[in-house]
Length: 556
Image (tube, rainbow, N blue to C red):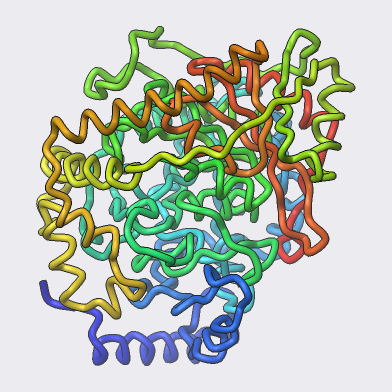
């Protein structure tokens, strides 16, 4: 494939951007993003004490950010800075229920809500000292869709407080959405214009506005060794709003969590194989729900593992995560992991007593003051605390399982869902494609891809490995839950994400507090399969008692 972004074209892009800025900056300096020399920042990062933050680049080498908001220039020209500031108290950090109330009272409409987020994304992402690189694509039809929904509401379409109707939502860029490429962050998929994934169609049917796509760790963070989370060749390096270049973003749903934390959308969709919702949600002080695999469809989502993959909501509150989850549910006959559950399966949000809940408190976290305060708060709310020991578990062959399944499942995705404009068909093709320009397409290397190419295990061997690892994880977690008669295990961040993923135990993480440096920490609750309601009930009680989420100071 011809490299359309060679040095000559890159120079032309920089020159064109400079001309645009010269012509129009006096009128609207925030309308344009100017590429710049990152070398000083990269050299400063090279000595960062955390090796995972020693970035090789910040901005994507193939994405011109001005293209993100170019479709909205006319609409945003009429949306003034004064209007943006006046809407902040009505929109910033507000829940879905509060936003719907403001719409009913005539204080805002859905078109203004979309325009607010577009203006905000442009405002921060055009400023190279504040940009987060959390958004990879914006939906050119977002404002038109908002106008349609406003008209329907004015014609008598009743909208409930807990409805996703009219709410701008971002999708992780491994989730298919018509009219936008689904890249998984990879240049090899830059022309992957697909149909809606099943969950996207459900969101649209329930009235959600797809605002755009969120950046992610490329190929859902199963791509390279020792590369920073939040990096993709298509979207660049996602940065944490609580500490740009200071704290990691977690992965792989990095852009989804960062965008929600920075109030770039009402909520976002993430996906998880092992920690990819829990990690970024906790790292960015938002709520992330990793449901039991099989409750939400994966059809039309670029995969790693058909055994472990799940989609899930990321939001600023437990209530909003429930609303987004409910808007994505539905029986998908093409997803063989889905159990025979009700087509209208849903979760309920309410703050009820948790006096009958037995919570496993992990002795290994006894010295963590934030954790002990959190479980004490749950105890005060009526929960019964039970001290448990959790031996660290090693799941030998976990990487081989993921590699073997991705090698198989990606090929199936490319055959069944990918656009005809995509030129790769297998993981071997990904390797060859990237090797043609490693500096551009894989600056951190592609060690996981290399391993997958040489992974020759048979399907029988892969299935035996899957059964062994899942049995091992289930036996360990089930023995803890059975021995201590637990309803929920209480953890921190994504510390037990691997075992929960293999055992197919759902989990939710929500803000627990901040270290002295300002780095967010999440409280994570884990429950047996299909016990999401127990997670929601306990998380809602803790959230109401704690009220720990703080808006990142530079993004207020």
